[in-house]
Length: 101
Image 1 (cartoon, rainbow, N blue to C red):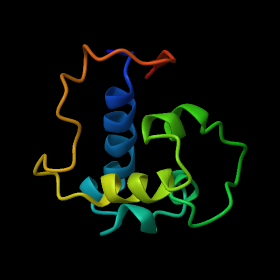
Image 2: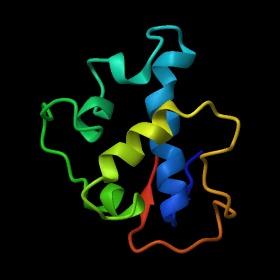
Image 3: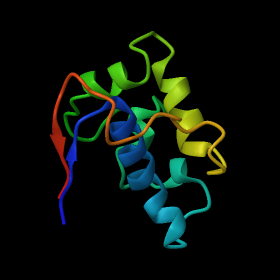
């Protein structure tokens, strides 16, 4: 099933979900340790191996120079909801529409 991503909160949640998949699968302990993922590049820890369009992700994290720090914090959050967006993920509008497969 696919679901259209229509808000910044949804984009952040989808990126966090994708980054944590290798952790949930037991492949790594820290999502930033997975070398075959764009997570390290988005976090600013290495150059991307392929061209990445990050404008929407940057915008979702506040569009400031420190957006990668906020991205890293979100990826490394404990999952207890403390640092996750509190808005209803499927009702807050976004500037760009993304679609997941």
